[in-house]
Length: 422
Ligand SMILES: [Zn+2]
Ligand SMILES: [Zn+2]
Image (cartoon, rainbow, N blue to C red; front, side, top):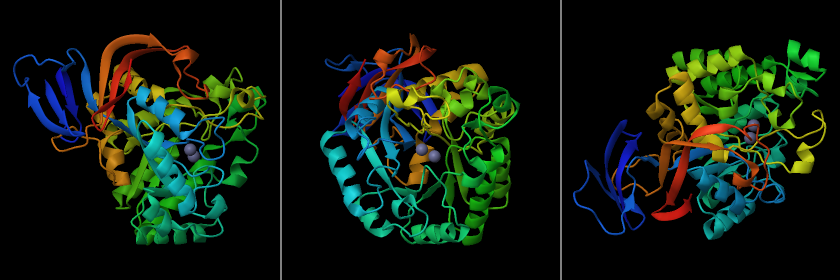
């Protein structure tokens, strides 16, 4: 297979140039800047398109096993393929929880048989996500997990978190931490501030996140075990991470497209598609995150794709579940950040390719010869509107419905095989 005449972005080297790519046996056989010469029958014409390595989304919920009415491994992989995401790390808060090798094996096997993209299971830190007993990390690693996390909650006890960090390190498993002090979030449903008072909705203060960011950063510094903070949403949290990095703590972090593009104002209409944890924050927080992207303190962008059924999200704001989907809007969101905030596209691309690959220690994220042929063809100028019909997830809960985007995935290739074509 040849992909000819596109602008080839390789975030591993930071280069973007027009050329041809040859794919053979699922791998990139050669990259020919300027073109290898001559028209080839059967080549994919990529003129005017951007040729990108497949995106790696390091934070998604596939709801499988247990909540397949919201999403499953197959439907989630279809949405990923349509979004140009060729590998995704799925969180363990399924039913049963992925805290033992039999659940990991179920995910790995179903993905191998039926998923369109690579599925990278994340195992639990503690059994049942209960925070009291360590999960079977070693056995889960043998079964195929790439990282550990109790995402959905924080490990409440600092002592248990310390032990979890040290135990994960013995298996070389990256630790991903969701920062939320249960006592401080309480019954809150949106960012705490004057807007939450005006709307009469329970607030989740920024401090609810920040105290755990600080704790986990301190524990990482103390134990020497790297920690990755996911869906960082506050200015103070970011300051803590920046400061810690300066003093040598091995802490990395990601932010979501929705925290980078939206603020708590979006909650004003009581739209439950704007309800998630962490909640949408203030414009000041959002501005700080944008700065963090630019300066490099924020290493990755991850969606926290969290499908919920329509009847669940149709409840009152107080009662509806937290979370929104995001796989198909990841790349268009990057374009929006690039266009509206003058952020360098290559730099943004690194945050969804080489950077997550490095943190998770998985292959992918590059288009150099010998790499897996996970490739996305992207039309950077194509305008389109996100409507429900275009959403391939089983759930449609996104605040971006009806929004006009510029830039569209036109083909996704995984290991040399086309898994999506617009
Ligand atoms: Zn989370
Ligand atoms: Zn999550």
